Image 1 (cartoon, rainbow, N blue to C red):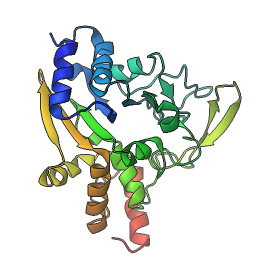
Image 2: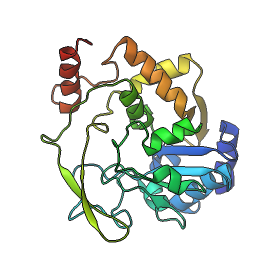
Image 3: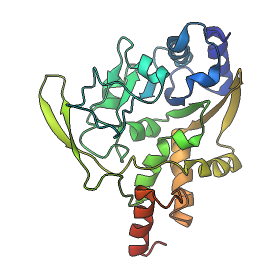
Image 4: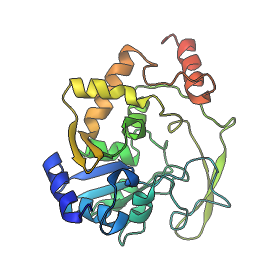
Length: 266
């Protein structure tokens, strides 16, 4: 059985330090049996980063199905696994207001990291995940690959990849604000498809940007968020569609390729 102490020890050996700001993507099942359940994983991460660190949880509920009758940050469940769903309910957790791709943060800078998520694109420049990277934040993958690494969506924004959407036209979604007011937020294309994001791993490893460890049979990868952004941006500068999937029915990636051709980038 995996204990909290073992997780803390492994996280620290991997390179997670006191005071870190960290976003993680996870598969709870990959860890096997965990003493204390998913809450113990969140507790272990919080202990590893200490009271001055910030733990960012991907609290995405995605666009299918769209939240109804509105998105409520306090009540709408996330669909990114039981660890972030458990963590977003922790005392002191602050969840951003984006109706499909919110993040929740536990830490002293939670308000700063989650604010104004309705003012720009979900994974756009200046979004919560971009702000995390710019302050030296790290990305931890627990039992999942880079296909889940949302930092790559931020890199797409810097690389100006003109992605399309599964929805045509893009819908607006009602959002319930903390004061009870309901406003409508127009979705954007920055989340779209991540099916080909695994293609970045070779480039990251070639540059020595990934550190590895294991918890039971779960493979862990740790990398600096800004390394991910700059590496992905660099490979997209050489081949703009390198992180787009090739499934003919994928509207976001096929639409992006068409847009890139129209702009003379393919």
